[in-house]
Image 1 (cartoon, rainbow, N blue to C red):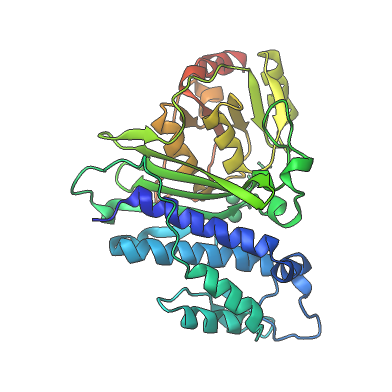
Image 2 (cartoon, rainbow, N blue to C red):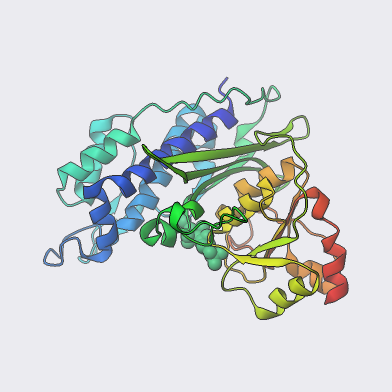
Length: 361
Ligand code: 2IP
Ligand code: CA
Ligand code: CA
């Protein structure tokens, strides 16, 4: 039977390919930055927001490819985007990825209001076979019940950086390996969780623009499995040294910034919720704290699975500060999609700060 980790890794790479194409192809990029004015004179135009097309097309591609290998998952795959667009005349069209490239292309043609160049370029990328051939992916336990698995997708995290961000080389900080802004902060996030327990069990973070080389952007993929029988990631087996570095949203409250400084942390502001958790996972930062309710289940499910796989955790900061209770974020379908109570991402060896923060309140 197919391997879900392998499947999610490959589909994240296809997503990254689409994201790179839309950003690097001159014509497609011109559509991307024009945003709401592809053709102001044409009121029937469906894509009033082309950047949403990137998001929706990637999400639908992920849905299609995952369900092709795991039909039981079809109705369990959810994401940030809805698949429909409504134009100014109130007509609605659904972006769909079909089994045949020509059908996908025809659907895109409708959405793009007859732009056959764009429709064909995109459909071709959506229907390419992508195999990353990662050799370290483990065998999973037999008899996994995929109808009890939910999937959260954020097709593009840090959209602002994706649309407007400068190339990574111009803004990454050499010293800390944590870019503040730019394409390096963009990620594709896919996470699988156990519907019964609400625990994240598989995760992929794909950074489509991790490196700028002579031949263009190269991506990076981090994956993790957090099952009782298999707990593993593709990260190198090192024990990152604590550098007492906190990575925060530029919108973080002064109160928390001060508390972390008082505890001896250096502060870096950086874009992208997925990117910030990734930096904690890789050891480039030691914690990510977010006091506001500005992330959603699709931002955290995949990253948390990887963090858990290395025995780190993603906790609700509010519970820690208010009652000293150490509660992990979970994925309960009955509750809101918002991560209420904020976030605190930590690797295993940094968990001592849980007590320090509670004492500090
Ligand atoms: C956003 C994105 C933002 C982040 C916000 C997320 O997701 O990751 O960068 O804010 O929390 O919801 P910040 O960069 O201040 O941490 P999206 O780009 O998918 O809307
Ligand atoms: Ca997001
Ligand atoms: Ca997004």
